[in-house]
Length: 117
Image 1 (cartoon, helix red, strand yellow):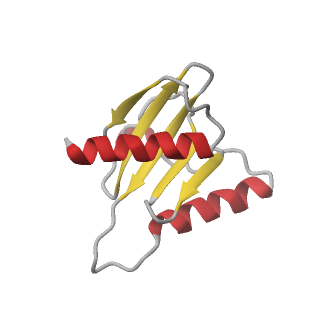
Image 2 (cartoon, rainbow, N blue to C red):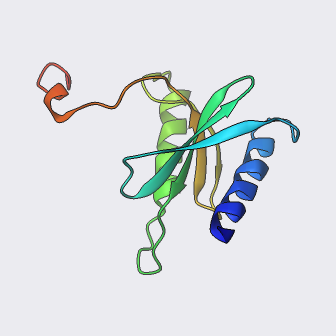
Image 3 (spheres, one colour):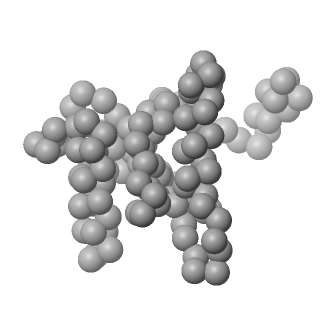
């Protein structure tokens, strides 16, 4: 419970840094499926975003969050819009905020030659 309260405080801080008002109310909803991270949908009054909390292990020096967010910024700066818009990241907490895109999870049978072209 303490970790969840700490995480919610981190989310509050990052949402304010990303431009949300301190008084904005929101719902934090866990999304299933991440192996190397935990993903949450933040439902706000004005917009919905995704908060992505990256797994970190002491023996793994890779900067997963930094690499992913930096690439998303690079792609957006070059007009690539088939990925969620990167909004904010915090390197110390290994958390990113992205635009939320409505959709449904894909199934293995959805991936075929046509889908990956």
